[in-house]
Image (cartoon, rainbow, N blue to C red):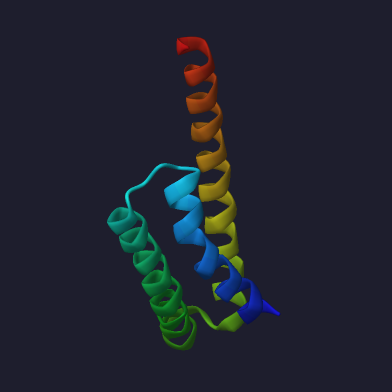
Length: 89
Protein backbone atom coordinates (compact mmCIF):
# COMPACT_ATOMS: atom_id res chain seq x y z
CA UNK A 1 0.00 0.00 0.00
CA UNK A 2 2.86 2.36 0.79
CA UNK A 3 4.33 1.90 -2.70
CA UNK A 4 0.95 2.67 -4.30
CA UNK A 5 0.76 5.93 -2.36
CA UNK A 6 4.37 6.80 -3.25
CA UNK A 7 3.87 6.29 -6.98
CA UNK A 8 0.51 8.07 -6.89
CA UNK A 9 2.04 11.12 -5.25
CA UNK A 10 5.03 11.06 -7.58
CA UNK A 11 2.85 10.93 -10.68
CA UNK A 12 0.61 13.81 -9.60
CA UNK A 13 3.10 16.04 -7.84
CA UNK A 14 4.47 17.69 -10.99
CA UNK A 15 0.95 18.52 -12.18
CA UNK A 16 0.00 19.89 -8.77
CA UNK A 17 3.10 22.06 -8.63
CA UNK A 18 2.53 23.37 -12.15
CA UNK A 19 -1.21 24.01 -11.94
CA UNK A 20 -1.86 24.90 -8.29
CA UNK A 21 1.46 26.32 -7.16
CA UNK A 22 2.34 27.91 -10.54
CA UNK A 23 5.82 26.42 -10.82
CA UNK A 24 7.42 26.18 -14.23
CA UNK A 25 7.64 22.73 -15.77
CA UNK A 26 11.40 22.49 -15.28
CA UNK A 27 11.27 23.73 -11.69
CA UNK A 28 8.43 21.37 -10.77
CA UNK A 29 10.27 18.42 -12.30
CA UNK A 30 13.46 19.36 -10.47
CA UNK A 31 11.65 19.55 -7.13
CA UNK A 32 9.96 16.18 -7.70
CA UNK A 33 13.28 14.60 -8.66
CA UNK A 34 14.85 16.00 -5.49
CA UNK A 35 11.97 14.55 -3.46
CA UNK A 36 12.36 11.14 -5.12
CA UNK A 37 16.10 11.22 -4.43
CA UNK A 38 15.59 12.16 -0.78
CA UNK A 39 13.00 9.42 -0.24
CA UNK A 40 15.44 6.93 -1.74
CA UNK A 41 18.58 7.97 0.17
CA UNK A 42 17.27 8.91 3.63
CA UNK A 43 16.20 5.34 4.59
CA UNK A 44 19.78 4.22 3.93
CA UNK A 45 21.01 6.97 6.25
CA UNK A 46 18.52 5.88 8.93
CA UNK A 47 19.60 2.26 8.57
CA UNK A 48 23.24 3.25 8.98
CA UNK A 49 22.45 5.16 12.19
CA UNK A 50 20.36 2.28 13.52
CA UNK A 51 22.97 -0.38 12.76
CA UNK A 52 25.98 1.63 13.90
CA UNK A 53 24.88 3.73 16.86
CA UNK A 54 21.39 3.65 18.32
CA UNK A 55 19.69 0.37 17.45
CA UNK A 56 16.35 -0.09 15.76
CA UNK A 57 13.99 1.14 18.48
CA UNK A 58 16.01 4.15 19.61
CA UNK A 59 16.43 5.25 15.99
CA UNK A 60 12.67 5.09 15.47
CA UNK A 61 12.09 6.99 18.71
CA UNK A 62 14.68 9.72 18.11
CA UNK A 63 13.80 10.32 14.47
CA UNK A 64 10.08 10.32 15.32
CA UNK A 65 10.67 12.97 17.97
CA UNK A 66 12.74 14.95 15.47
CA UNK A 67 9.93 14.64 12.90
CA UNK A 68 7.30 15.86 15.36
CA UNK A 69 9.42 18.83 16.42
CA UNK A 70 10.19 19.85 12.85
CA UNK A 71 6.55 19.38 11.79
CA UNK A 72 5.31 21.44 14.72
CA UNK A 73 7.72 24.28 13.95
CA UNK A 74 6.88 24.06 10.25
CA UNK A 75 3.17 24.29 11.02
CA UNK A 76 3.79 27.37 13.15
CA UNK A 77 5.77 29.03 10.37
CA UNK A 78 3.08 28.16 7.81
CA UNK A 79 0.35 29.59 10.07
CA UNK A 80 2.24 32.86 10.49
CA UNK A 81 2.82 33.07 6.74
CA UNK A 82 -0.85 32.46 5.94
CA UNK A 83 -1.97 35.08 8.46
CA UNK A 84 0.56 37.55 7.07
CA UNK A 85 -0.74 36.98 3.54
CA UNK A 86 -4.34 37.49 4.72
CA UNK A 87 -3.41 40.74 6.45
CA UNK A 88 -1.30 42.01 3.56
CA UNK A 89 -3.97 41.58 0.92
